[in-house]
Image 1 (cartoon, rainbow, N blue to C red):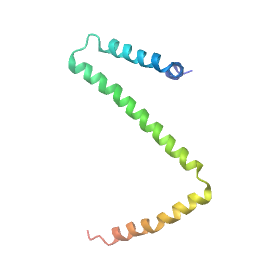
Image 2 (tube, rainbow, N blue to C red; image 1 turned 45 degrees about the horizontal axis):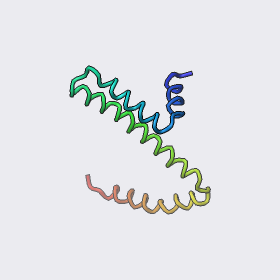
Image 3 (cartoon, one colour; image 1 turned 30 degrees about the vertical axis):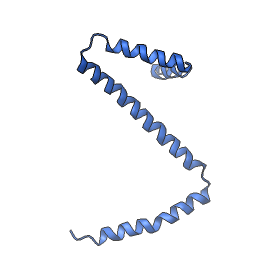
Image 4 (cartoon, rainbow, N blue to C red; image 1 turned 90 degrees about the vertical axis):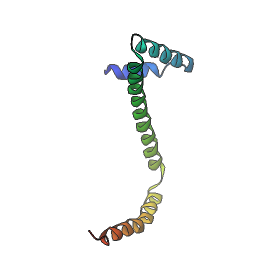
Length: 97
C-alpha cells in the first residue's frame, strides 16, 4: 500500500490535541537549521499543499451536494440556465472583431 495513504490514515486516528502537537513538533523539526527565508519558503510550500487539499475537499463536497439533488430538480436547474447561455452566445456573435 502507498506509504502516504498509510500516513494519512495514521494522522486521522489522532485526537485533536495529538494532531496539533504533532504538527507543532514537525514544524520545529523542519525549521531546524534553516535561515529565515528558507523557513518561510518551506512553510509556504506546506501551506500550498494544504490549500490544494482544501480545494479538492471543497469541490468533492460541492459535487456530493449536486448528487443529492434529484434528477427532476437538476433538469429544472439546467433548463433555467439555457436562456442565460443563449444570451451569452448572442452577445458573442454580435461582437465586432
